[in-house]
Length: 354
Ligand code: ATP
Ligand code: MG
Image 1 (cartoon, rainbow, N blue to C red):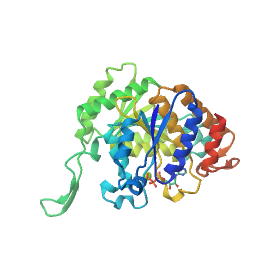
Image 2: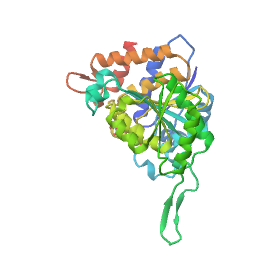
Image 3: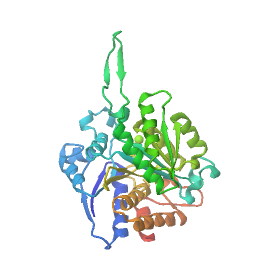
């Protein structure tokens, strides 16, 4: 097991340290595990003058899996793209062709009270948002800001998906559904956008190869409404890059705290990049208050997907559940009758529970 550990910036470093601790404890001596640490984001700029230093990229290419923290500093968006700490992750995903972003939204029973929604709406919530990562408005050409025929400045982006790109993400969705509750909801805007018409046509065709999986299509606006109203009616939701960006954050809030949610970015093989859904959170960095559970659960996803080790992944989940049952909470999920602890204490408690 060769794992590149790219902790990055802000709380990324703090939570990744806890995830590594848990990983070492959980995997222990059962398998040889090599961890290769490398800087990325502002840490890459500080140490090597590049948000994605060549040595870091090489370490990621050489590894079986990547444990990623978060990148970004305040004012990030004002820095030119190539030197922008926050852009290093996009470059890395693109280089490794990690096109499928899995974001599970599930709720530990102990945290039902932390959700913004009513108990009966979220209790038992367990859905998987699958977001395509390499196409859509984010990468489509032409793009730019230029004067139009009337001489006014005009901004433009292009929503683009090719048939093979849609096919491969659709297959990932149907296969994922088979391991869950066998339902796929494809989210598009086929009533307005040609790109999305093709999306719907291709997903429907791929769906015929999976007759055991129920397929339903929703327009993105209706999907958001239903996600808020009846989130438990969904199993796997698959969508393009832009809609996935928005819906996955919305789904995250159903579960109470962004500090609880892991994610995986996968390609065609077993290799993947695993990271908490949250960012570098400069506002709380360096204070030992960040919730490390999203990072710890990301390590569990890594064991499951890249190393086929469901048993150890399940043990980590169990340990997190146990710590929550004991009443330990970081500030973001703290409430009446629970004990507030810091980042490191939370990590130690998970190790203890293991
Ligand atoms: P990015 O641009 O990298 O996504 P961001 O500042 O926009 O960064 P996040 O870093 O995800 O967004 O953080 C949003 C807010 O949520 C933070 O200001 C922080 O207060 C809170 N937050 C994020 N992650 C955690 C965590 N692990 N534990 C506690 N609070 C968190
Ligand atoms: Mg953010």
